[in-house]
Image 1 (cartoon, helix red, strand yellow):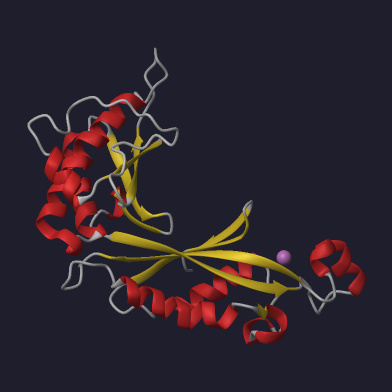
Image 2 (spheres, helix red, strand yellow):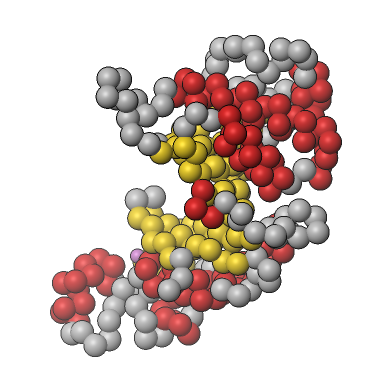
Amino acid sequence: MTREIRFSIDRDWATAAHGEDGFARAHPISNSWGGWPSAVGIAPYLVLQISVEGTPDDTTGYLVNIQLLDQLLRQTALPATATLLRQSGVNLTGEALMRQLWTTLREKAEWAVVGLQLWTTPYLSYAIQKDRADMIEVTQTFEFSASHRLHVNGMSDEDNRRYFGKCNNLNGHGHNYRVEVTVGRAEMDAAGRVIALPEFEAITKRCVIDVLDHKHLNADVPEFAELNPSVENITMVIWDKLANQFGAAKLRKVRVWETAKTYAEYAGA
Ligand code: NI
């Protein structure tokens, strides 16, 4: 099962609150999003998700009491974040924080921790999985808008209409696509990162967004001249465009949301 906490820590808050019992006190959560500590001034909210596995207790049906899980996460994440912020300031990387949290939580947790994911913005997250714990994965979300027509040349017009329905509309229709690109690496770069974020963004923009954004996929993008631009095929085409583009960081996964209800995901052959 997976549980998440939300919290905000800036360097000043961390410094002021780092007292004897600064982090251990029980604090009521007073906002409906469940975030605590609350931001003081303008500071990011971090979201931390932990995944644990095991067999539920015969009597309670619980694998873990989530209140104990929340307590452990806050008691670990708040001082670790504050300490690293004081040490590194603006040079603190998500990777360094993740490595610290993973090590501490694995030591302290009474349950089998199988994964940890940290969001520093709603569009940027860092993850470690138990089965590949030497690697840190970074996922960024990108967006593009495009039109397409689902149509297979080898099928009759009538069959195309029957199979694809309104998605077969002669002049196409549009979507706002969200693309989640995950890259991973075991040995960090000299600055302690999987990849420099501006580089990550520039490569994805050049290879994917500039090629697909505000285009009619069937007409404007050579890959879809014959290939039906389904979300499945779009995902695999994006994978091909990004594979081997990130240097020492390896492309791990591409997820494409076509609507809020549909996504396709590909992690290579
Ligand atoms: Ni469509």
